[in-house]
Image (cartoon, rainbow, N blue to C red; front, side, top):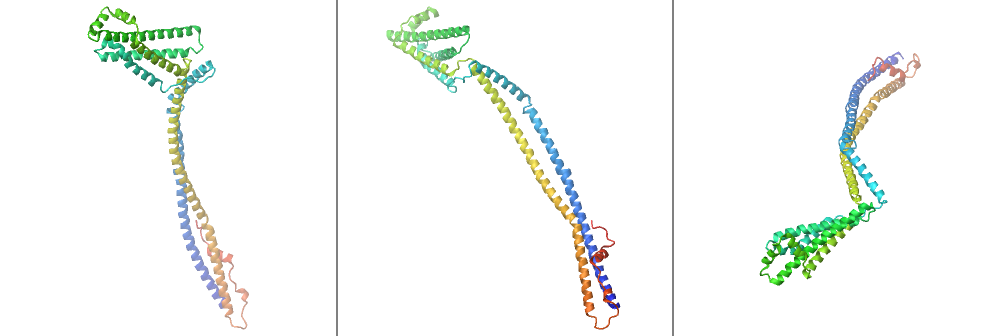
Length: 397
């Protein structure tokens, strides 16, 4: 029994020594691993807090600064935007006032896009028509005839515009004095137009009569005779000329073009003289404000998207850094439990091998009387083994 006890103690001490050496080596490796994990955790925390989070904070402040600057330069707080908004309010107020005067009816107008081209076309049509009237005095100078015909055509179409517009304005209920002024203006333009048309027709008729009577032989001398008495005499001769087919044809053509132009002007304009200008001013102010708002929103949206993309990238990087940080923390927190579990497994292995040694040694004892008691030969418990192999050790981390 004494020999068995010594051998068992030696074997158990050897096991304990090797176990303690293994635990010491493991603790050293785990301590180095824990230090490396701690360094990585601190680096990630510093990257997360000092770099990424600070950059995100700076970006948010910069975004607020930039958007506030846009508000002051291009947005609702800018001088142009404020002026446009005030102009829009004034135009809207004027438009509402006129709509109240006309009982809220919509704007009555037509031929908006084709009116000016149509009137220009009528003025051009007047040129070859009225050129015939000026051949009496400028038959040898066609350029002057064309120029005078163009001027007369423009004047006649302008008179048609004024007559049609004034007739349309007569529908608007205004002060009697204003209605009388409009009526007198219509009569004046109509009288001027009629006089011009009749003189043009008389000039054409006189020219045709001279051609028919003289066969063109002494036409220049006759024309000089007509104009020798001065302008008043020439106009009197033209005015007293009785109209024939040529004169009436020219007069009817001019009258048709004039009526057509006056009708287009009548259809084009609203009865209220200030309704369309107020509507146009309101529409221009609204479109200008819309353009300013659209331009501001486009620039602000572009800047917002730019900052959002940067913040989104940083946020993704922050999440990845935090996930890595949490993973390393979990690995660091698992070092001590792993060491304790490994120590327990080693202690269990040491006790099992110690028990196996005892069982083998006791089985090898020859049968017969035994000096001493087998109860005094026992393996250490796991707790005792764990205490023996971990004593005088510093923590792993």
